[in-house]
Image 1 (tube, rainbow, N blue to C red):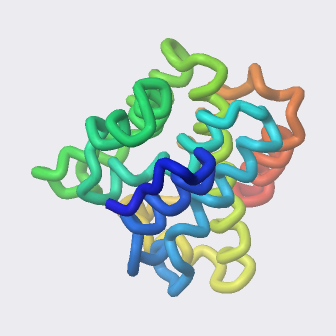
Image 2 (image 1 turned 30 degrees about the horizontal axis):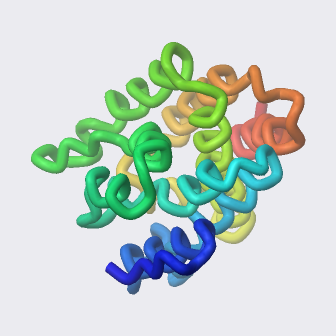
Length: 192
C-alpha cells in the first residue's frame, strides 16, 4: 500500500484511499468511487478543522468496501483514525446476500448514532450520508425513481425511513449548514 509518511495527513489518506479504491466506480455510474470519500472529507472540513477526522472521512469506506482492515488503518494512521473509520464501517455479513441484511445493517447504524457515537463520529456520518444523498438527488433528476434499482434495497420507502432516521439521529448537528442541507434533501428526494 502506497503511503508516504512525509506527506501531510490528508494527502497520505488520499493516496491510501485512491490505491484501495482504484478502478472502482459509484453504483450505477462510471464516476470514480474516490469522488465520494473526497466529497465526504470536504464536508467534514466545513464542520471541523480536526485533521484526523478529515482523514478518517477520506478513508471511511476502505474497510467496508475493499480488502483493507482496521488493523492496517491503525498501523498507517493511528488508533483515533481507525476508531472513526470503524465507526462508519458496516458489518456487511459477507456470507449473506446484502439485500437480506440491509435493514439490520441500517438499524445498527441508526442505533450506534443514537446511543454511542461521539460528535466526531456523527460529523463523519453526516458527511457520508449527505454526499450519498446529493448523488441520489442528482441522479433522480436524470433517471427518476429508476435510481433505486442500483441499490441492494430497491424500495424507495425503506431508503426514506433510513435517511429520515439518520436526520433525527444527527439532529444535534442542526446548527450546521450541512445538516440543514441534508434535512432539505431528505424532504426533496422523498417528497415530504
